[in-house]
Image 1 (tube, rainbow, N blue to C red):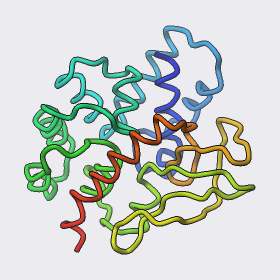
Image 2 (image 1 turned 90 degrees about the vertical axis):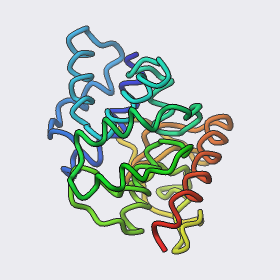
Image 3 (image 1 turned 60 degrees about the vertical axis):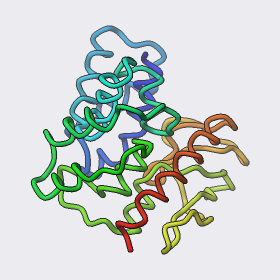
Image 4 (image 1 turned 135 degrees about the vertical axis):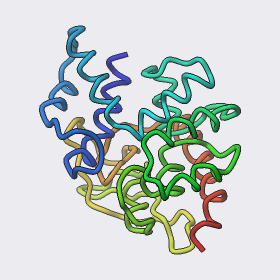
Amino acid sequence: MANSLKTLLKFAYKPNTMRLCGRKEPEIFSLVKKERWSNKEEKRAKKFIKDLKGVYAYISAFEKAKGIGVFSREAIDAYLLGGLDWKGVAQPLKENLKKIALKEKLTEIEKMPQGTPFTHCFHVLYFGAIAIELPRVLDFADKCKVSIGTIEGNIVRYNGLSKELNSEEKTIKFSSPFMEVKEGEKVFLHHGMVFAKANPKKEKIYQNDLQKTLKAVKPLWF
């Protein structure tokens, strides 16, 4: 449990410091580097994640639709990377998103494409944002979506987005405050920050669901 929660904390770190998501609570991220958590610390991490309203809308919808633990590794990996059987997820997700959405987002919620992988990439590319005013623009989508890349010195070569909303190889400087990374390692990024390491199985799941998402959302962009 603690390891899956740590992954979400690492994922949330950059947008939280940018005041895009959740209550500003910088001390919560010290838990990432602790090997063992007390019950009190675990409860604190869960409370913080519940306040990441967009994230929690998804992982709690997975619990309702699939019966998997809301903070389980299965739910968190499904949200971040993909791989879930998405049947039945749309309705509880719509209900959750309506509770936190700006009024102008309600129509978009109702028109959510069926059968789409309901991952973070979907959320970014379909909505842009839910509870705050953020334009749906390529630069923000490219930074905020989950990306996969290969470490090359102080840069990472990753799957950025082209103007046509296809995957396009790009490079950026990255940060990795919570883990050491080595030359040639494949990693997952969020706002240019490493939050997890990749392996062939996870990469295949991620790439498969990302391509489905790009196909589904392209009509909204052009």
